[in-house]
Image (cartoon, rainbow, N blue to C red; front, side, top):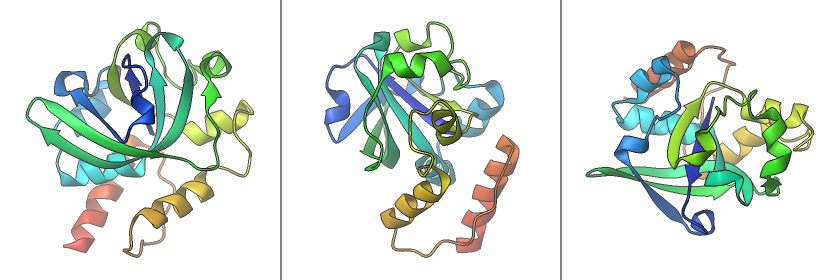
Length: 178
């Protein structure tokens, strides 16, 4: 799974944070995932922060960036996000990403609307298969980067292949902390 973050606001991804209108959260997300994340509680926020992100501009403009969310905060009718980019992945011209857009579950007309979607695809695997990122980057690099964000030790991870399994894993991890 990954977060797809699209905006029309030029220069947004050069800043430290961005606010989405709450109504734009979960657009172009499959119904099952959208139902799960509709209530943006603490465990859902932690799950979203653990997912890689693809940061893009509307209208196929500019380059896309890969990174993670570092903070998510609801503010009335909006959601503030803060983020950082993967230090080992350069910006990717959108025209290089477009040929695999269907494999990334980027739907027709989706890049013409500011929104935040959660996609049920493996972003790193898809980018590696298309030779858009190094074969050395991915799951192992993501774990290292994610660990560096927190001083808390993390439990050993296991591969989860379904949305339900992912949510169950996150919720069981949250219960273990309590």
